[in-house]
Length: 108
Image (cartoon, rainbow, N blue to C red; front, side, top):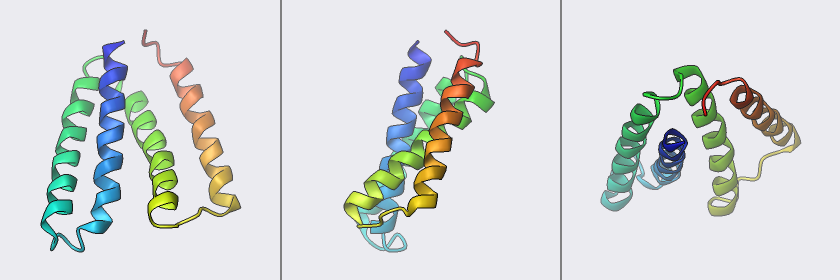
């Protein structure tokens, strides 16, 4: 179960890094650049810990799928980038896919 905690931390830190990436302005602004770099480093560290217990295909599917959905949510809040209907339906399929992959993962 600790693997899912590590995976959750990896997802959250990746989302933070991605949201702040836009604010770096090409890595010309120091604070957002530091936040982005540290967030991505933490994300890769925690995904590497996750991979000790959860297969890479399952981990990556959950990491990228949930991350994509959270990034879309926060981008719509922070940058007023509202997804259209097709994008929203696609994210629904991603959620369904993550659930299905998780059911068959064989991980406790």
